[in-house]
Image (cartoon, rainbow, N blue to C red; front, side, top):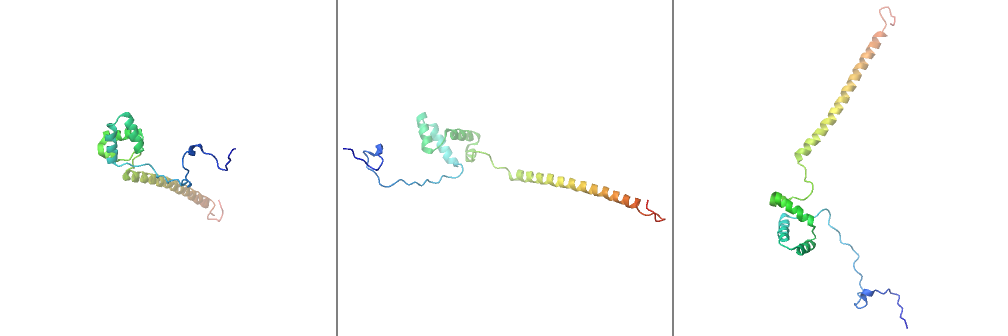
Length: 149
């Protein structure tokens, strides 16, 4: 005699005691942006990493959630400037405020010079137009006898 059930059979739970509560479907929120590591942490991990065997190095990276490329970058930073370089975050360094101000002022100067060139051209055209109108006015002005030239 076969026993039928309305519930699907899960082979993984045949021998296990089933839990009536469902797992929490909520996904934890991930951190925003790249991770930042303090210089002391970088130095500690580098010192520990360099004393381990190949298998132990992999275990350390997995335990800490790191990539081998980070270790390479941290070594390079250490070699370039020890604690000072280890304290910097990887990636593009922020620009100097003075350089930003200089660039802003150069853009403003270029824009103002272009506006000045336009204004000079307008003044030149207005001067030529004024001279032309004056010439037309004097050519069409009545002479002493009242005749228009």
